[in-house]
Length: 348
Image 1 (tube, rainbow, N blue to C red):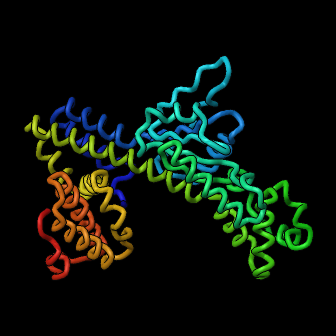
Image 2: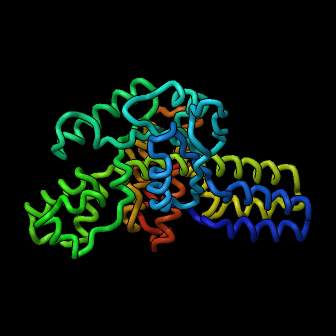
Image 3: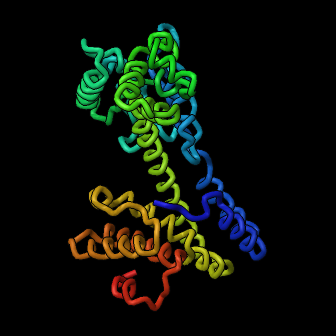
């Protein structure tokens, strides 16, 4: 879900306004802003030799907004303590199967903040046919997930972090493909060669995109990004709670705080926080809006969910999500007197 005030500008401005009346209250708002917008620390760990650094590089190249990728060190090193995994998100890299050290690493991490990555899956199975390799990878990832009780995604880290294909490479891939095995490994070369044979008109960017897709990195980066967003939403929920509490206690700055809490930035935070309590709905919800019409449809869809007998907490969360889409609709040029969103308003 899109957010407002991504860099904390409105909260910083609010802190300045509040500090004019009450310096201590202004500092409290600054602390809220600092916590909300601090980087989300993603720890990437695993046993020695599993490709932690490669996976960390692949995730970092995914450029997840607000994420800070860290590699604390290897697990299960004889004579050495395991690294402290106190990141907001923990990614444990595996090879072949889940080991005891892997289970220990993620044992204390909430499922919403943990992810296992099964790396080097191009070495699994007996067949080296690209399609067979990925079938074997998915099957082994499912086994590992059942074993660990957490999501496990397959990855070919070396392919995910390999350099882009150039136009000069295309001729080599067509004539002497094995010359490039040191760049994309045998699996990547087989995929690229087969693609060029099927479609000789493919250019270097298209082949690069194909190899990236075949590596599994998009799914891994997407899963890490979802966990980063989950952590950010939880911080937003805490931030709103703190600001509401401060407004209730301090009448001298209440007006300024309530003005912020009624605005678009707070509505976006409330919507993201609300989705933390709406897992079943999130799976069926429409995609993020690209137009005012889309935003209206999103708002209407969420309004219909109020008739499904949600709990009181879920009802409040649905109203918050719906309100955010109405704000998006207005920012995209919707008019408050438009009959379509008026019909969709209801509570909130």
